Image 1 (cartoon, helix red, strand yellow):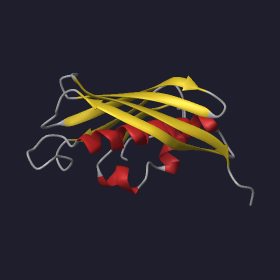
Image 2 (cartoon, one colour):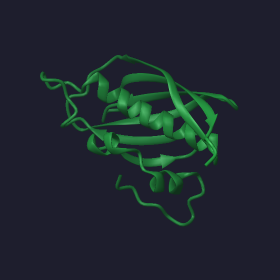
Image 3 (cartoon, rainbow, N blue to C red):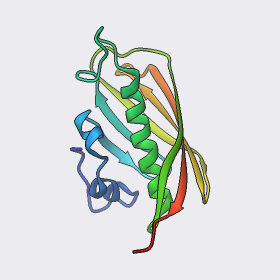
Image 4 (cartoon, rainbow, N blue to C red):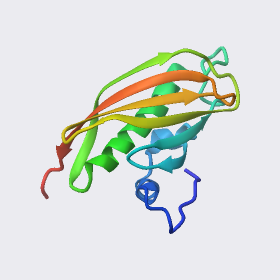
Length: 144
C-alpha cells in the first residue's frame, strides 16, 4: 500500500495502514486510498490480474472486495474482537481489460455479531464491473 497517512486523519486510515491488507492484497497491487467504518476505497491494477484472454479475473474482483469488506468489518469490531468472513458472493457485469479498477465498500449492516458490506468495483470510466457482498462474523479474540 502506498497511500499516505496525515496526522489530521481520524477515520481509521492510520489503523488500516499500520495493520496492512495482507500479502495477497499486496501481491495483487491493492492501494488503499480511503478507510473508515462508513466507506473504504482501494484500487487494483488490471495488468497482472487477468485471465489468459486479457480480461480482469473474476477472482481478482473478489480479492479486492473481500479485502475491503473484511478490513472494514474489523475496524467496526474494535479492539479485542475479530471479524472473519462467513459468506461472499459476486456478480460480474463487465470485464476491465486495462488501467485500474476501484472498489468502494459501504456497510449494509453493522451489528454486534454480524456485518454485511457491499463492494462496487468500477473501471477507469466509472462503469460497474462487479458487485460483491460479504458477511463477516464478529467474535471475541481468545484471551492470552
